[in-house]
Image (cartoon, rainbow, N blue to C red; front, side, top):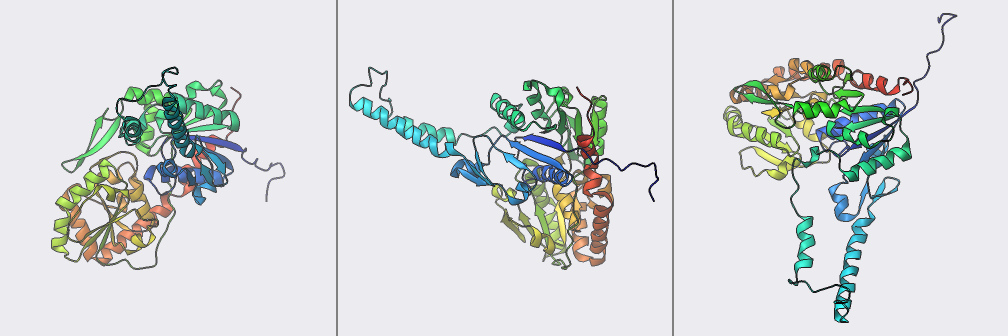
Length: 448
């Protein structure tokens, strides 16, 4: 019974969070997008109103001029994209329709003036190459994009877009998706009124590689320690995806609040028995995933097939776009809308990474489904709870041996599956992973 002098606990203050991102915030398209969606879903469930400013519109919207926000995302956040009109979940991009009309009108008017002999008076001349004007836009539209441009600091266009959103929404907290987005703070007239959160996915200045079966760390491959520190210094709260990352951030910036937010995962166990010969690899199309898969196919898969000739490997995800593989037992499935059936059928899920950083979301998703997983130490790095529920192998020989054993030994496979399910239950609930971040957002702030 409550004490007579006790007072009811005050409800958490209502808070509005605005997230700014250049990379996709959508669930299921990439590991980082799934992680961000998971955080935002949890915050929404606990009373935080969420807005997301996505400064680079989806590629398919640029082609067809419209795009429908996925229902699951629309239920937890309001998505703002520059140059779009919002009609419920529908986003319309008028420039996709209007720009070609404006260009055709300009050409038509120019041709008319030249035909009437008025071009000289207006400074209009015929092009030296009759096809130059028609070819140039095509070449511009198809020009290759710098693959590292996604980690550039914000440009003036993004500063303006973000500033307008801030003025309209008046949020309590700002979250910057990746550290290089924090310079947006510098264009705000009164940055101290907001709680400023930097969501990190890794240590940008430290990168892990597998060398002779052991993890080797290199510094400065993608970003200098000084630049990363400068970016993070602009924030009030740093969100680390791993405990060891948090220790490093605290050492670099001891005056900042650092919270650990491991990716939360919901148990998604199947009652169906997996197919006895089936292996599965799920990945997005990036260098680390391609390199790891090719290493596995060249060095481990032949050993698996020699010991288990009926073994099959299904590969799915956008990684299939970059692959041409003709290996026995290997099938490329491409991107699939739902992975449920593929995970149910898989006896073994492989994560053969030779390099990386952060937390490997696909490995987390696999253990959430109670699957027996084989990974290099890189795949499970930074998450100690995974050591007891994932078969780890630093060499191709050991990797193949684990896969063969789990395909052949049903008891061993079931034991690993049970350990995976227990690890998810005990360590990776949303409250355990994101509760500290929610407390930072909802706690009262002193007047700046």
